[in-house]
Length: 445
View 1 (tube, rainbow, N blue to C red):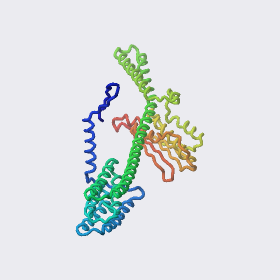
View 2: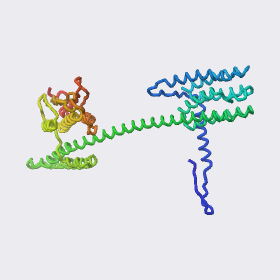
View 3: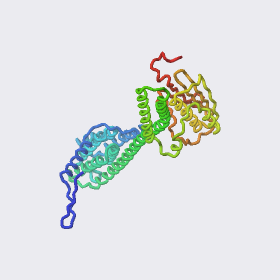
View 4: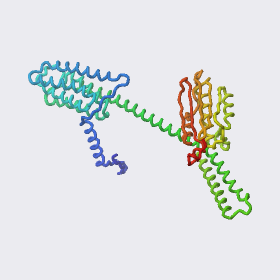
């Protein structure tokens, strides 16, 4: 940007512009425009949605038909002028077709054909005829300018319009004839094509940018949703970890009193364990202060115990009271699970039941819990809905949260429709026994 400064002289404000910067900016703009107008780069016309290639076919047919009319319009040309006009007519028709893929090169070809044909017949054109361009030639070049304006920036299209009109004025100057009115009429047609093409291009670019922005917004929303769900999971696991750290601290404090005359080294080590546990609890509370939501409902459950599969019956009873038909099944030998695994399994069942209530009204749900030597499986299946699902009031975090919980434990989650038209969610969660074992032979089958 040129630098502008205001200087007060005799009560008047004098604006001083850095002319060197202004000249450099103008030269840079001119070089950029020259580069865009002096190129044969390929820039194909995009397909027009549902119309497909139909506009391209229309352009080719227009070029063939009007191209033949263009050659007929110069019937008064004789000798070499007649041959030149025939070549220029073919070149102009070809330029229209070329503009579908290389608009700048096609515009140069059409402009040159207009200029050469005007100079070829300039001495023999009868009075009353349109000149320096024929009506068909004007129509062909108008289409070329339209196709050019659809692909290049508006200022480049305006420069092409100026060059085209300038070539017509140059024809008049070289011939000494007075056909300014014909050039003006042609300029109006050319200008209209440039305005229409530039407007369509601006609209297309705006739509493209809007689509890009929508994609970026969707990606950002997905990332934010993921972070929110991970934060919620971290808040729940905080309570689990804090409970264990509290137990460690209490055990380390009580242990010296369980032994008569404990050695000083033992007392010192236990004191160090307790101190580290207390410090860890302090850091956990700080982290929780960052992760904890400020929503009132989050504050109300801050100190509530985290549920596990032991409370599955209570969850199913609440869902049945809401009108959902639920059947449960347990295979294997139930055993206590680590708090993290138990909490994740409970939350997966809870979210799956909530999804069934939202999206499958009137369906029946089957919840199966399977205990295995090194894992636990959770399978929730619902039948096809028998009613119309109302708009979901959920946050859209359900499946994402399930996947995050399974991935956190090193497990797997599979979701998808069933052949009968229902929906199934299956989670495989490794138990603490599998994750803490370092030797496969230590596990019992």
